[in-house]
Image (cartoon, rainbow, N blue to C red; front, side):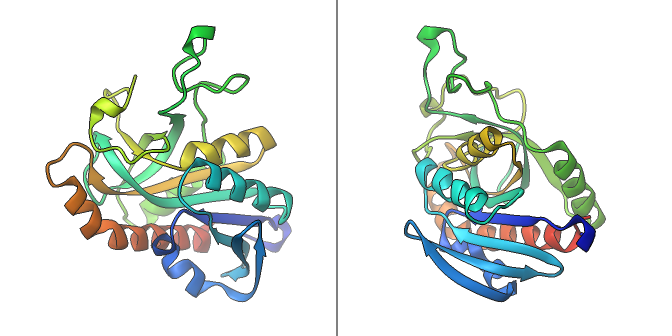
Length: 234
């Protein structure tokens, strides 16, 4: 990304393990703490970035995203982390969000789609420009990925019966932050992309064991992918 196209990029993860190599890669950083969240502002390659560990869940994610936009004036938000596979994906898959929906919002008695927040769209669609760039970067690195719908809710999904109205005809995953990030960015008119690594498959008899075994590895890989994207953004 050339200096003439300077932007501030905000990167948020839910957990310490998901920050991985990102914090180790930031140069000349300044640390600050706002509303109980630590932020690290500096450079990764030629990019000006602010990274943070938001915390788990929708409220933490929305709070951190708002601070990145308002306080640090970020104009691109990258949310990276791990997710549980619902359908059409396998453990260790790289996921690029094609859309994001809530799995725990129900205002259907008033004519809204399941998962839709009133006055907001039924689903949130990440920036097409940055999705295209991300796909180009992943292809150039020969990293296979899948585009998928991300379902976000404030619960760890252990069985598909916990999810309503999931479109299992297309690849999809579940996690606890992405749609909240997307909602704040959509409301603020800010570009964003959401990346996930599949750590476990929902309903698999070995799901919890797989999650515990793969969590750290998948989180580090997610950080690596994010770092490669930063190195190759135009």
